Length: 138
Image 1: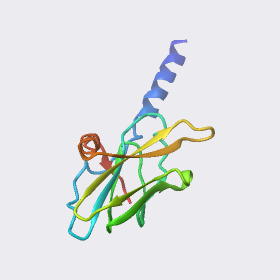
Image 2: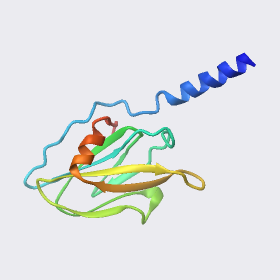
Image 3: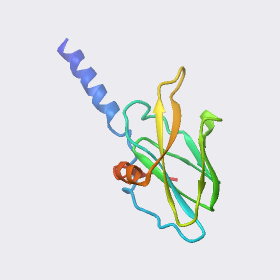
Image 4: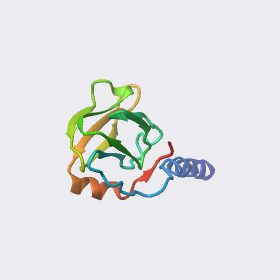
């Protein structure tokens, strides 16, 4: 019985390690007079940590793992952020030049796989939450 408990504990410990993005820590990208910067980040939660859905924001796409972020540099205008696994469930907002936007990605329970949700958060909340995130590999 003790051996079984040790195996289960070891398996849980192994499953909880290595699930987080391992790139460089968060670094701000200065917006310019012609572009806005949209940070899409995903705070680390154990549930859904193995899922890395592609996220499109504006004209670019990136896979964002648990504990990761990606900075999308886009021209001003209406920006759509969504995942191909959740067509029609993304968000849209108007981006202005020289501005920063923060979009939090969350994975919730789903029938077959996790459901992806996006939330536009204010700058203060976004800057606070993204500090623990790391840039994923592209």
